[in-house]
Length: 88
Image (cartoon, rainbow, N blue to C red; front, side):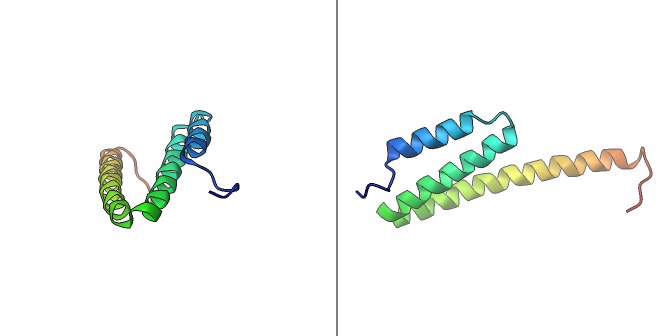
Protein backbone atom coordinates (compact mmCIF):
# COMPACT_ATOMS: atom_id res chain seq x y z
CA UNK A 1 0.00 0.00 0.00
CA UNK A 2 1.33 3.44 -0.89
CA UNK A 3 2.22 5.80 1.93
CA UNK A 4 -0.33 8.42 0.91
CA UNK A 5 -3.24 5.98 1.05
CA UNK A 6 -5.21 5.52 4.21
CA UNK A 7 -6.17 2.18 5.66
CA UNK A 8 -9.44 1.23 7.33
CA UNK A 9 -8.21 2.19 10.81
CA UNK A 10 -7.11 5.65 9.69
CA UNK A 11 -10.36 6.25 7.78
CA UNK A 12 -12.43 5.14 10.77
CA UNK A 13 -10.53 7.39 13.17
CA UNK A 14 -10.71 10.36 10.80
CA UNK A 15 -14.43 10.07 10.09
CA UNK A 16 -15.45 9.15 13.66
CA UNK A 17 -13.57 12.15 15.05
CA UNK A 18 -15.05 14.43 12.39
CA UNK A 19 -18.57 13.26 13.15
CA UNK A 20 -18.14 13.36 16.93
CA UNK A 21 -16.68 16.86 16.70
CA UNK A 22 -19.84 18.31 15.20
CA UNK A 23 -22.52 19.74 17.47
CA UNK A 24 -25.10 20.22 14.76
CA UNK A 25 -27.18 17.13 13.93
CA UNK A 26 -27.39 18.04 10.26
CA UNK A 27 -23.62 18.35 10.01
CA UNK A 28 -23.18 15.03 11.81
CA UNK A 29 -25.52 13.41 9.33
CA UNK A 30 -23.64 14.96 6.41
CA UNK A 31 -20.26 13.72 7.61
CA UNK A 32 -21.69 10.26 8.36
CA UNK A 33 -23.05 10.11 4.80
CA UNK A 34 -19.59 11.09 3.50
CA UNK A 35 -18.06 8.26 5.50
CA UNK A 36 -20.56 5.78 4.04
CA UNK A 37 -19.70 6.98 0.54
CA UNK A 38 -15.99 6.63 1.31
CA UNK A 39 -16.43 3.07 2.55
CA UNK A 40 -18.61 2.14 -0.43
CA UNK A 41 -15.91 3.45 -2.76
CA UNK A 42 -13.33 1.25 -1.03
CA UNK A 43 -15.70 -1.74 -1.19
CA UNK A 44 -16.25 -1.11 -4.90
CA UNK A 45 -12.52 -1.65 -5.48
CA UNK A 46 -12.67 -5.06 -3.80
CA UNK A 47 -16.18 -6.23 -4.69
CA UNK A 48 -18.09 -4.05 -7.17
CA UNK A 49 -21.22 -6.22 -7.08
CA UNK A 50 -21.49 -6.03 -3.27
CA UNK A 51 -20.84 -2.28 -3.31
CA UNK A 52 -23.58 -1.86 -5.91
CA UNK A 53 -26.07 -3.93 -3.89
CA UNK A 54 -25.19 -2.16 -0.64
CA UNK A 55 -25.45 1.22 -2.37
CA UNK A 56 -28.91 0.41 -3.71
CA UNK A 57 -30.06 -0.77 -0.27
CA UNK A 58 -28.74 2.36 1.45
CA UNK A 59 -30.22 4.60 -1.23
CA UNK A 60 -33.63 3.02 -0.70
CA UNK A 61 -33.38 3.60 3.05
CA UNK A 62 -32.34 7.22 2.55
CA UNK A 63 -35.10 7.78 0.01
CA UNK A 64 -37.68 6.41 2.46
CA UNK A 65 -36.40 8.68 5.22
CA UNK A 66 -36.46 11.70 2.89
CA UNK A 67 -40.00 10.89 1.75
CA UNK A 68 -41.14 10.61 5.38
CA UNK A 69 -39.58 13.97 6.28
CA UNK A 70 -41.15 15.54 3.20
CA UNK A 71 -44.59 14.16 4.10
CA UNK A 72 -44.29 15.52 7.65
CA UNK A 73 -43.32 18.92 6.28
CA UNK A 74 -46.23 18.92 3.86
CA UNK A 75 -48.68 18.07 6.66
CA UNK A 76 -47.20 20.83 8.80
CA UNK A 77 -47.70 23.37 6.00
CA UNK A 78 -51.24 22.19 5.37
CA UNK A 79 -52.06 22.52 9.08
CA UNK A 80 -50.78 26.11 9.05
CA UNK A 81 -52.60 27.02 5.85
CA UNK A 82 -55.97 27.62 7.50
CA UNK A 83 -54.61 29.85 10.26
CA UNK A 84 -52.71 32.50 8.31
CA UNK A 85 -53.00 34.13 4.94
CA UNK A 86 -49.84 34.03 2.86
CA UNK A 87 -49.17 35.04 -0.69
CA UNK A 88 -48.23 32.03 -2.79
